[in-house]
Image (cartoon, rainbow, N blue to C red; front, side, top):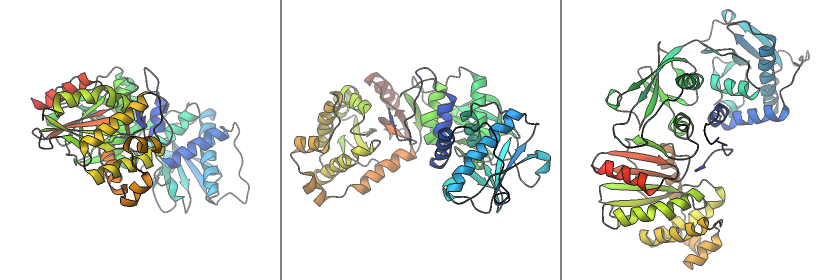
Length: 449
């Protein structure tokens, strides 16, 4: 599966490491901080700020339990790395003050130790990583601090102020591979704790009808034992109201769910309840009760496998017999594919021939299966169309943006992916990654029942 991420995630064959999950939640701003931290190395000694620099900006390191010297050095090293990043924007911040939680009573802090930047300004590119507590106090959100601690080999114990309970909400449809099986509940509690900035004390199963209005299933919801807006403290947690929270779809689909399922690539399945738009080239009868939206990138090798192995069988069994329609949404994962995607979209917009479009994709993906990286020359050779002439008649930016937006709404970060939707049941099954025809058959049959 090809993912749209700043850096390609390296996932182990049997278990996604905690470090990889942490890295995946980090925004571009904090990735820059993390890369800067790693590239510079964790300094073994604390630098004492000069008199001129002191007082311009400082870090407050707030602790619950007394910190040992090793923990102090790690926290100061993290502050030092962030200070170097801040200095690029003209913010001089090299003073570090340790305070016990009893000395800081003006702010609600969810996790100790905590790192607060005391400064009149903070660069805008760090706004996602910090929570503004006042005009001049900024809390580094706990999951980010956790990431930086782990980057420095760990060793700092995190203490949570708030407790919560987690509920795994089951799907309403009985389909193989659609569900969550917990192999290590204590490890899952740990992952849910640092990602939600609360101490998860219990994980239970919940039926679909207990939470029938979630955007996807199976789902994990977090309910704090007291009223607190934990979405302020974690960038990947969103509020559902009534002190109930869930994980942001993109992060959940591409990181947490694969981690829980103990898989490395593909076969992530979710039940979704918000209807897609059926725009794009298609084959089959659009009045059919089942529609399959295929998200693909022309230089994606797993997409090539899907078009070579799975989709022709689905076309023969269902599309050609009027049982379903297959719609194609281009998702640009590889930037080098962008111009070619525009050419493909323009060709369709001008011809409005979905069968021709599908057959062209089969030819192009046949080249990918053979190990070729598709170029504009391949497109022009197979279509006998000049790209210059094509682009003079068409601009495909709008429709490509629509495809990308639809993928984002469903938390799709890479290709291939398929959304199999039932008009009769008003429900869909999202499959992320390459799957063979038997799995697709199981889904279609369940939606047709």
